[in-house]
Length: 429
Ligand code: LRH
Ligand code: MN
Ligand code: MN
Picture 1 (spheres, rainbow, N blue to C red):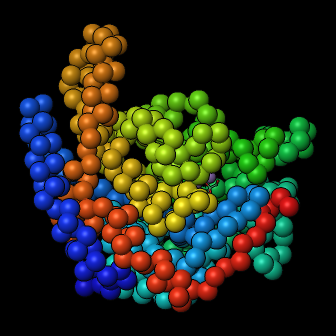
Picture 2 (picture 1 turned 90 degrees about the vertical axis):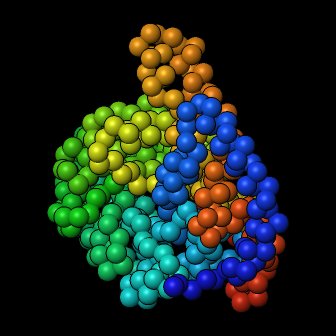
């Protein structure tokens, strides 16, 4: 048995007031799905097995380039962060692992592992950081890291990634995610081809240090912090990287890293088709890498991504992409945002499970565009909340995670031991 940071009896108390209504709603939805030939309990079983990882950096208030307005009870260090992650998992029963970012979360690996074990958590992919300078490092990443013109700077970035692998090995992680900010701000500043060659050469060094049972994920992003060109700017470059590196290399799709009108679900389909989809950073975006809560802006797009994933899950024998949230919370309590976002990921998955795939295939074969799209809409419009809530209840979580969390006063309680953090200006002023 692991330690509960959050008072389980307050979850039970909150559930008691909601359980009878939930059971009625579940039964009603079950009847409706049954008429369409879908067994609700089978869907529930699949949803119960689905999880999404929490980014350690998501449980603090993120801030923007302009300012940061911390809330009360902000986690002081990675160990407070792990406790907040445990609360999210206890209430949602959907987020048993945490993704660490090094050096932000650097701490004694034994203590990290012990704390996670005690809280019933595991560790998802490790994230390296060569997009900012760590204190005391010999060479600056101002003009790049893995693709820098200077060999010593590239070597330092390679060593850092290898260190992330070493820490990950000690705490039971099985993947490394590499995102770099390398690029250029002015036409002519960098030689596109040579810069990419240097990146590939450095990544091959990192790849060599990867244990056999690990995967390496490379994450593309259109722009920012480099505003003219970025080395790993899109899924095409990302695909080339994964092919150059080898079988343990896969592409990671962060939903916010594309131009506003890009067809992300189609990128997902292509990467699946060629065996190179590694996983996701879920968030939502309206303009750029906004890091808004998952499903906050365009839940239909999220559903369409999951439509591709469920199709693949049914057709491919060994399909296990990594699922992680990657968000920045500026105006909400991060715990609440992450709980709601995890539920949005599960909702998209659940709705996608409801698509009548046989009918859809028939409509596609017959070029019946209207009925094909309606078959997706029918699934998307079905309110699957009773399934999500029943899964949480049966696993010991909260029917209404935000309601139970607010009723408990967790944030106020931790604020008594976690000192207030001063706000601050962001990076640009
Ligand atoms: C880059 C990114 C990447 C980083 C994280 C903090 O925008 O999405 O995944 O590791 O943000
Ligand atoms: Mn990301
Ligand atoms: Mn991002």
